[in-house]
Image (tube, rainbow, N blue to C red; front, side, top):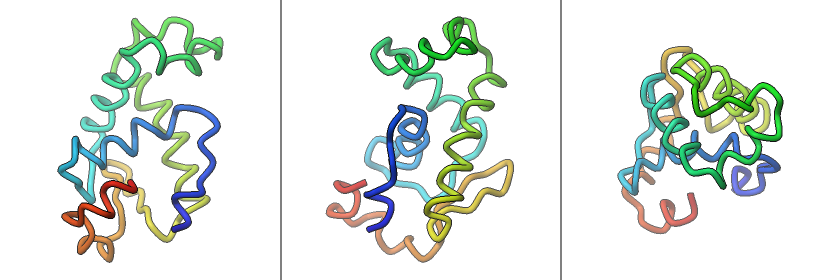
Length: 114
């Protein structure tokens, strides 16, 4: 699957994918509040924040509010639209995986590869 070969050179895409994964209860749609919370939770762990720390704009990430997290979430959102646009839809307030994948959301094999 094309998404499996998507470049993951930095950690920014991971919290967005984890938001869809939803602790194993896969969902096709996430909203900005869920994206914010996923990014905030992911970057609480210092080892996950290494890319933020290396970027001068992220030095104070521990003090970030909702808007800062949503700002960095724009990068992976755009990256997925540009590289695997056949799977993702960005509707602004929501970010979605195409409906055609709905049959897979309860498939343990699919989820284990996500």
